[in-house]
Length: 321
Image 1 (cartoon, one colour):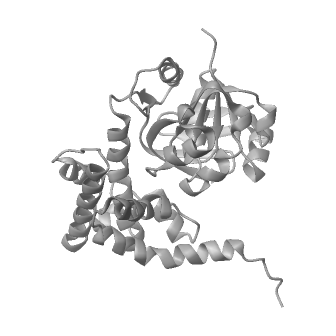
Image 2: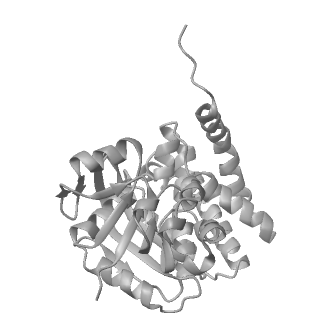
Image 3: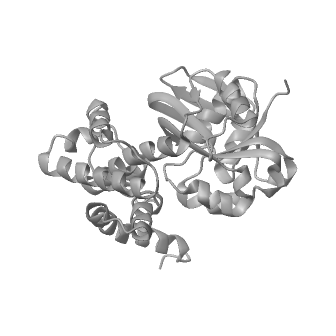
């Protein structure tokens, strides 16, 4: 069988790890990156420190020019939620008749964003689980969790292209890949976990071990989880009566120092996935006439800093003096 050609959009904590593992396994993997990350990949390769085993790829295929790549079998979208739309606009040269685009963001609406740009027939649902981050451009550290990816056709049919992608991941060390029976259920289950974890972590600004046993804060987390479960149900996805209890149990099982990437970005004064997580809940809840007062409160409290970060990014720099 012909080896798959896969592009990884972004080479951060998610893209660097999963793309690196595919390349390590001999899969034809191309990274789309830019700036310092692209320069590092071209000059030094990709270095990954991992609790599943460190590895170094002295040479990787990397470019910032999609038109030079040609059509691909699969595209993994691993940028931040707020970067998905811009990144998707550059994908057209890579899209062939049967190309599949798999978003691995923490948000819930990336498939819809992608579908509007590349066509719904090319989009799958997807999610991943990993705690990883950039040490420096071209250097990724995987710190926790057994790395996992799930993906599937939006209508849940078992297509040849998702089977081939699963087989590609199966050949990679340090990755568990599966095609769930209902990708929407799996995506909402992940979203339920990450959105409240991110929101509570961002507003308390402490690791999970410092907030999960505080009764007042745990009550906020539980209320937010219940709101997301109600929202999912209103949008046709039944997460089950034990979804909240299972998610709280997952929180209790995490190492005390665990933090969410959105939380870390907010604490560091960077642009975050606030709009793609809590903002998405508020927007979708309005569309579906579902009350989400706790999540709206978390979102509203975090919004001023996010707007300030965005404003600074758009403002021209001023010379000192």
